Image (cartoon, rainbow, N blue to C red):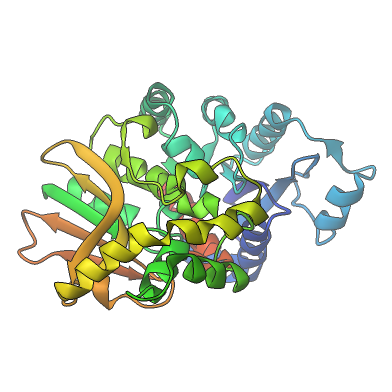
Length: 366
């Protein structure tokens, strides 16, 4: 048994991604001990109400203990949670990793404090990477100073190697000139299904009934999720962009913004004509319409909008709810393409797990 340990704590443990991550770590820990030379130990779990920390590792009843907050659990205090995890990692002469699997706006506010405690940070939560730019730079600088890592592969494309591919291109000296992508599984499905002559509202209704959209489809149609991903990619390329400076085309008609969900769905057909015109114009030109996020690195601009593409274009070949990202660079004479499932519990957890493994490997080799 290896004497090296990686102490891992997970915020949002009761959620689907957090739960899947814990299950994956427990299943792979034995196999990874021999390849990493380190024991992976989940020492802390927390949800919105309760937290549980054990330096020996939480047991298989962690979920029940979080739900009931018995004698082993505490009311959640994420600052204290970080301190307890850092103490456990220090006592074990271990690599300490805090994983934020929440979708919270508040949890990312603690990343800097956690890193100052000596913890690495891993997250699929887009709220930090697309949040205030000064806070983003502060954490990046702190990571270099403290030799701790901030990893966020799963923020864009879930388990797809998008961030790591972009980082590899840049670190090896390639010059990325443009990035375009279909970055929402929901909007990918909607536009892959939508055809001229079909009411756009009926496609949205169908997607909602099949569970592709959020319970309130406006959360998808607003484009905000795609916008956050675009900000993360743009910043990775060195662009100093904020979420509110992007050119963002929302698919939610302005008069329908304040309605309840049922009213919104009932009135959405009244706005089908605008999208129908675009679909018809695209079809006449042998093109398709897609909802795309783009980063023009040369021009220093980023945008999210509906655009038309020739049927031979990779975006037109996409099916189902897959994501696709196209990198245009000086080194690659034809675009470099990453394509596949860009959402889902297991693939997102896998993207997070991959980041954890990279941190453990690099921490114990440094």
